[in-house]
Length: 193
Image 1 (cartoon, rainbow, N blue to C red):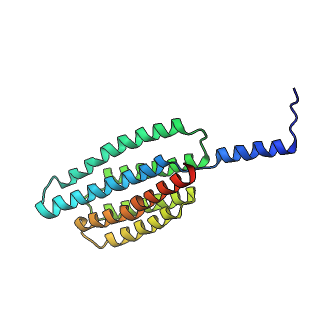
Image 2 (image 1 turned 90 degrees about the horizontal axis):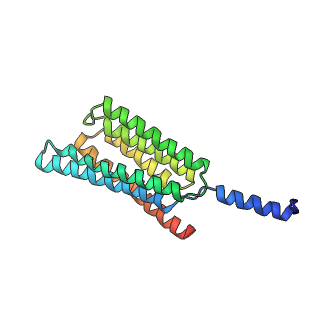
Image 3 (image 1 turned 90 degrees about the vertical axis):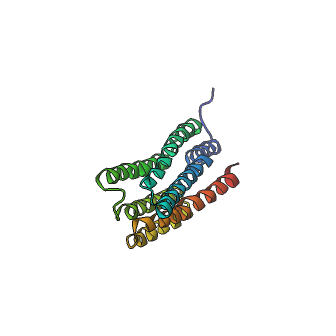
């Protein structure tokens, strides 16, 4: 058996290896982004409405909607790992970005009252950091534009009451998660299906 490759075969193998290792966002990744955008938007608007219209002390319970989001994200993450043939550095780094956000969010939630006037603005600023890094990692500018919206919303929210910050948060997730998520979904459908 001849084990020597000619130059043409070597280049074909290298090209195939590079193509397999190249990061390609999947439909599931855009679905996760949209899922969190819709959940956060719906929870923020529900919290705001319960607080604004009926002054319910139970308004913050609207955030329990995040529990199905966590479960769905974990399930989709496992499914995505099984489907993925090649794990790239971008996949690993992206996971680390969101893990970092989660750790910082939990620390803020535990040590800062979620009803504190600084809580939601800081969360929006953190969203912005994650969206910017995600956009840079996958080379998808709509996530970067969404990050700018997060930062602008976070800055404005510092000037508002907690109740009105919920409206800013709902708008921010539409601009940074939902719209870019739909754009990424369309792009992955167009590019990879």
